[in-house]
Length: 172
Image (cartoon, rainbow, N blue to C red; front, top):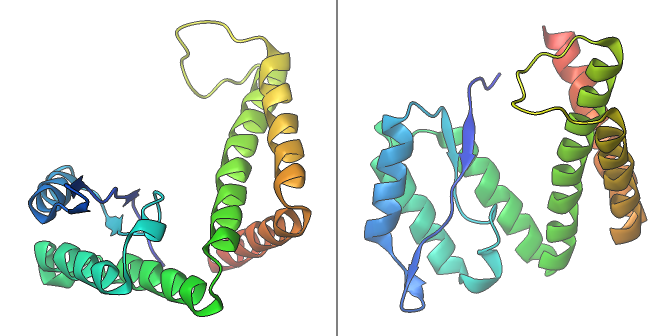
C-alpha cells in the first residue's frame, strides 16, 4: 500500500518547450522536502500541450532524478492514465474525470468542516470564524457542479471513491 504524500508536479516550459533544468530543480525540491512520490505530466493540465515523446522524456527525467528511479508507482500510474486517455483519443473525458475527483475532495473537506463545526469538535485551528452554512454550501455546491459538468462521470467518480474506501478499510 502506498503511504505518505504525493505531489502533482507541474511541467515547466521555456520558449514553448519543456524546461528540463527547471523540472530537475522542482524534483530536487520535492525530494529534499521529504515527499513520498511525484505524479509527473498529465496531472496539472499540461497533457494537451505535450507530444507522446515529450511525455516519455518528462517521465524519464523525473525518474532519473529520484533515488532508484522512485517513485515508480506514481510514475507508472500517471503514464498509464495518459496512455489510456490517448488510446481512447479523448483527453476531455480524462479532464472531466479528474475534475470530479478534485470536486469530491473539496466537497468532502467542506462536509467534514460542517460536521465538525456542528459537533463542536474542530480538528484544526482556523485564524477566523467561518459560519457553518458556508462549509455546507461549499459541499452542496461541489456536488451540484459535478452533476452540471458531467452526470455520468459524477456517478463514476463517487463509485470509484466508495470502492477505494471499502478496499482501504478492508486492508487496514
